Image (cartoon, rainbow, N blue to C red; front, side, top):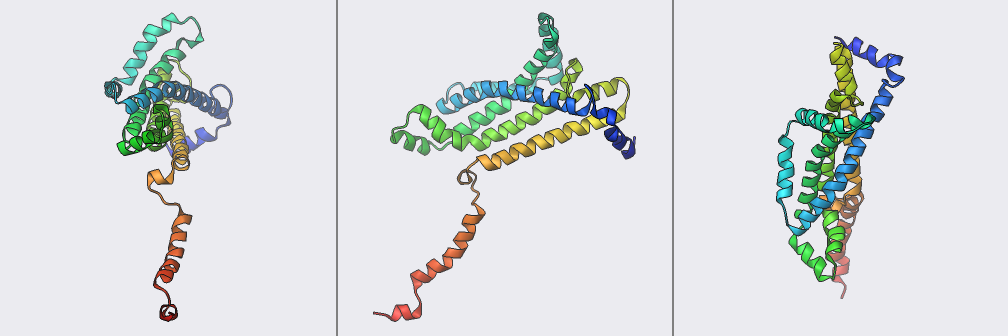
Length: 256
C-alpha cells in the first residue's frame, strides 16, 4: 500500500457516485449521528440539569459513567439479536444501532450537564433567590449560562464518540462510512479500509472544530475569563490618560 494507491482511490470518480459513493455515506453517517445526539440530548440534559440543581439522585450520573465500561461491540450485537427480530421492517438494524449509540452518548452529556450546574457558586444561587427568582428562573438564567462551557465539552465528547462508534455499527448492516471498513475487510481491500478511516477521522475533526467554534461564540467571555481584544486595547490606551488626570501636570498642581 502506498500514497499513490490511496490518492488513486480518492480521485476515482466511481467512489463519489451512487449509493456507495462518499457523499451518500457521509450523509448517512451524519444522519445517524444527528439523530442519536438529538435523542440523547432530550434524555440527558433534563436529567443532568435536575440532578445538578436539586442535588438529588446523584447516583444516576455515577451509574451512567459506569456504563461506559460496557463493550460497545458486544452491546451492539446483543441489542441487535434481541430487538432486531421484533421489528418487521427495514429498520430492524437501524433501531438497535441507534439505541446503542444513544446509550453511549448519554453519559458524557449527562456528566457535562450535571458538572456544569453543580459547579455554580452557592452565593450566585442565593443572590438570585434573594432577587425573587423562582427555581426555574435560577436554573435557566443563572445556572445554565454558567454551566454552558462544561455542557459543550460533554457535547463535543459525545459527538466524537458517536461518530467513531457509528463506524463499528456498520458490522450489523448499518450504513455510513463504516461500510468502507467492513466491506474492505470482507474483500481484503485494505486501501478502501484506510481511505474509510481517513474519512471518519476527517469528519470527526470537522465536527469537533465546528463545536469548538460554537463554544467560543456562545460562551460569555466573563465565564471563561477571556477578555475581548478591543477591551484590552482600550484599557491600555486609557490607563496613562487616567493616571495623568489623577497625578496632574506640574502647572496644574501649582495652581491655587
